[in-house]
Length: 152
Image (cartoon, rainbow, N blue to C red; front, side, top):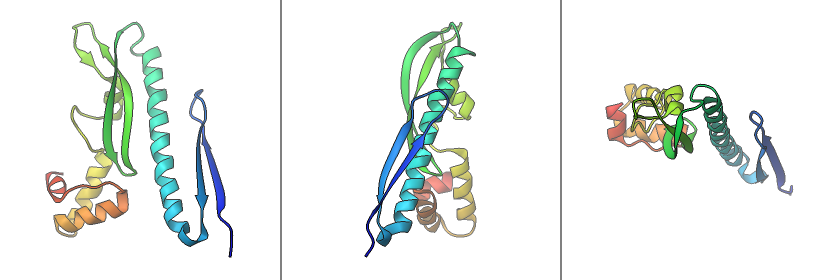
């Protein structure tokens, strides 16, 4: 009988502090644990990259603009749900601007990434919406209802 194996992954993006992910891997559920590590790694990397992009935008494109605060945004992606905060600015006309959303190509109130939508469409093309929703959950770790897939 083998012992559990400790795993430590350190993620460093830009000049920010390192983020560490710790897991214990058991031989009995190796594939499930590796899949879980992959999803968590992708989510953390995505959030760290958003922070760096937001900082770059603040120091370049939006330099000198009034910052109104930060707003939370949650989107479904191919690697699961991702929740992040981004700065909201006020432009010359007094309108609220969210440049991180623009850089990511996210429209207001959009909840799903374009690649997730495309994946759902491909799955739906080969089956019915209910089967596509189930397949999407297994592939992307993100639940999309049959009605959502129909709208995509």
